[in-house]
Image (cartoon, rainbow, N blue to C red):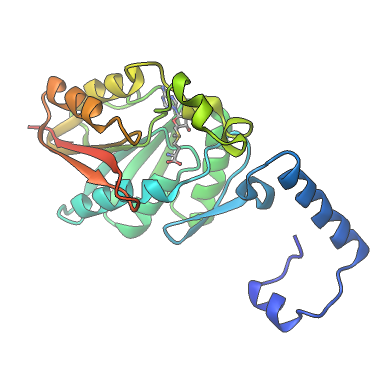
Length: 249
Ligand SMILES: C[S@@+](CC[C@H](N)C(=O)[O-])C[C@H]1O[C@@H](n2cnc3c(N)ncnc32)[C@H](O)[C@@H]1O
């Protein structure tokens, strides 16, 4: 808002705000206090694994919980000379861009069915300088991918149930896109994604899907029904089983 570096806040700490600066700040405070707008939307960015990503209404704000999904992808990618991956439901592009930043041999598609999310992801791909390795695609799940074309599929799909609405804060419910949050009872979207991933992955490929705090057993059952092997559940920084992982035999 002030267009200065964080360091300048300390060195110029006694500079009085100009009238316009004060009024812009008051407006932001009002939006935060009365409208409960998330801070990330107010300032227009959010940090994720060392990247400063643009966010705004229309895209989910990246969460620290999702870092474990990227770590699983990185650990797999580092065992391969080249990795072709898909990030399904890319939103801001956080997962695909963090993976591509950490793994120079990774090349992939970042897919979303929301044009609003892809508009923000386009900005982030450009700003991170990764346009030669991360291609954005408007599409439904892994529909844009050919059979046996991928080594790695990562996804943080919508997984909140209607019944869980009451547990959510106004910051989330009133501001973040519903299409990024909610799936129906039984998680049919995640189930369809697991089935598609079995076809899109090559033999030896890896699938990792983030899910809700109590949903890993259900998601793991989708993996085994689809034919994935070496199944495991990984916990997030809060020690919640957050990501289900499996290999394509
Ligand atoms: C929970 S958000 C995750 C965003 C981002 N990957 C992150 O971790 O912050 C889920 C994303 O999936 C997208 N999505 C929902 N249904 C989809 C579908 N059928 N195909 C592709 N993307 C979908 C939403 O638009 C949203 O951007």
